[in-house]
Amino acid sequence: TIDYELSEKEFVELKLYTVLGKEVATIVSEGKPKGSYSITYDASNLPGGIYLYSMRINNSSQIKKMVILK
Image (cartoon, rainbow, N blue to C red; front, top):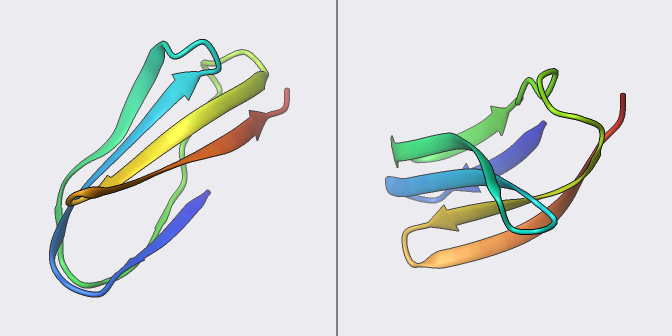
C-alpha cells in the first residue's frame, strides 16, 4: 500500500520498476483532486524481491524501495 496526499489538484504518475530499472507497471497516471490517497497494488503476478517505485507529482519526483514477499 502506498499513501500520499495532495494539497491541490495535480497530475500523479506512479510506476513500479525492478532494481535493474525495467518498468514493471504503471499504477497511476492521471490528474487527481486535492485529498489523501491510498493505493493498493496487487503484486501477485510478480516474483518476490526488491522493487523501486517512482512517484511523480507535477514537476517533483521521489523514488522509494518496496519489498514483495511471497
